[in-house]
Length: 180
View 1 (spheres, rainbow, N blue to C red):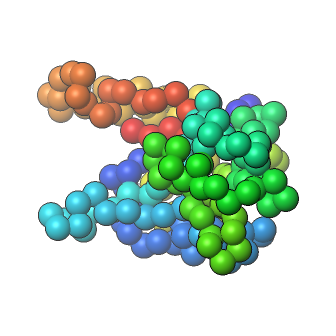
View 2 (cartoon, rainbow, N blue to C red):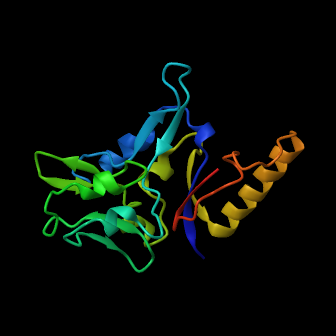
């Protein structure tokens, strides 16, 4: 059974419980590694959770000259290893999602690693375990595929026609984070 992170951005209520839980996760040094962003702050107050997309071919790891960003056997992209990170910040510039953050005081990069100490035992990451609106879920891959199928059907029933510009039609290939 393979578990994945599943995001439904429109379910986010902006409570930031995911950020608080992330700060409490062991090994995070009281730093949040996920974020809650505004879709368009000037137009409305709609928010969405933003965490590492766990790319199959992560740009952050590719541009790291010190090979500090490791990928586990399961495909989880970890934060930079402290003893290898040289503080060049290539990872922060290379990530298309702007996920890796750099701590200037400690001269190291940190990012969401899906609470690997938990997820390797199929225990939900802290953010998913506290999300009251189920915007962030840790579910079986088959359940995720069924949710996506039903969502596509509902969009079609509601009269939304698939096109190249529809975000609900296209889901990039990531290892463990899927969003609709």
